[in-house]
Image (spheres, rainbow, N blue to C red):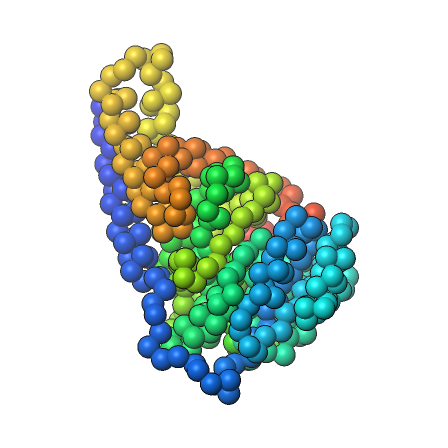
Length: 381
């Protein structure tokens, strides 16, 4: 019986390894930042861009974020930051950049039937005057020519929306090293009906949002509204997803507490927010964690052929993870072999917490409850 179980686990792990390698290879080819064949050289050719940043209790990152945004060399730019009822000094920091052209918008009370960030997105859309809107999170950092390159890429690809998988900040802080597998799963789960999307930095044509049932109105309770917009645009090949590189210069660094909150909010919805898909995802995570359990049993069982096989499996998946890290973290990619089991267990725990919190209706974002109708109905089933 034990031999049968081990054989089945080995077969499943081999299948996962092959799937991971194939999907990553496709993703690296499909989502690379290609150079544009034509440049938008004259000022008349350039569309105006509104950089829209929703902020809520962001004193830890607000200043550095805005310093980088106002250093942009894109010539037709407006910067709008909405303070969404912060209880710290976020509004003061935003207003201190008024001399640099940053426009402060005070968020209105959250209406019934809206998630906080979605309402902030909609309020920013209404304030924006640009042909394009560049939504970005406060913990995202850009370079002076990032916006220009994104605009040129979108024009070259005839894309109405482009979102960017950010690079990790190139340092050794714990919140960078242990930042989890969310974007790793994003690449693996990409398909046309549910394309890969990143919420930290995305460019979209203003008219596209305005034409879509009054902006974010139809997405007011979607946990990740940009993913629904991307899925719709993907059906007519108007959406692009790219992996940031050093030339594009999009990076992020979340505080560990924020990382945990974000993953709890997004992991269950990433697999569809339904009981059956959540159960399948949990089974897959348990299978991937089985080599770790086998190795941990070594002090009791002693080193056997099973432990040696498990060690080989962990090294294999660690190398695959290192391959992914080589695209998103230049300095620490080689740590993948060591970080894989840690990141996997961490994501497994956070996924279980995400499911339980959605079932209990206790998921929050920035202190506000998150209630998604689709997920609520799925839980009731």
